[in-house]
Image 1 (cartoon, one colour):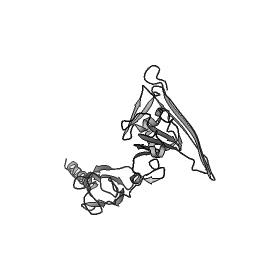
Image 2 (image 1 turned 120 degrees about the vertical axis):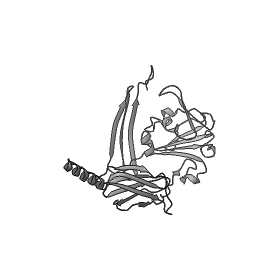
Image 3 (image 1 turned 90 degrees about the vertical axis):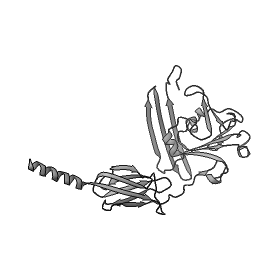
Image 4 (image 1 turned 180 degrees about the vertical axis):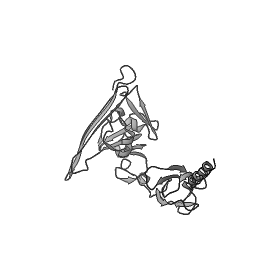
Length: 283
């Protein structure tokens, strides 16, 4: 029994020695505390985070019962650049000083016909980059536009029904739609945004407000402009893929793109099919 007690005491001492309490404080360049920062603790011999926590109102994070060893600390906070540093939990409090993130500038074209920063456009402009569109995976332009401020998209019925855009109380005929510099809707005519695919779209810009001085009298409430991707590699790039789901949903695409001297090319095909939820809902 005495031997068992001795072994138990030794085990408890070893467990206490192997576990540590790590305190981290997050501050800004003026040494003021930063609350709400995400702090990730990663062992130096691993890529899997050991713990994740959010800094308190005092800018502090406490990790309890973690192994005592060298760590990478990664701190993410809005408005600040991502900070990554190495440390060993020897000090009572480890302080991470953040740097301000570089100002990101978005350039828009539709508002003035020439590339200008969003702040200098003098119009309400929303844009979706190619990476954002790839993440959203919209079937057509109506799926992407409905997430932008000021855009009201009305679809009649199920997938494939007429999708109309209403901006600032204006009629659905008051929108100008441009693809790669070419107007695709008739002046004063309705446009079905469910028929404008965004496969291989590199950028979408949406201007809220009248732009008749630049685009004609049919641009009374908004302008929607889409640019498709161009080839960028000397060696031709071939991409293809497919996915599917329930209700007979299937999607496939194929692209062949590249560049040669002053010319670039991008040939692509994309098809989406679904049976829908009810009768006669095939698309």
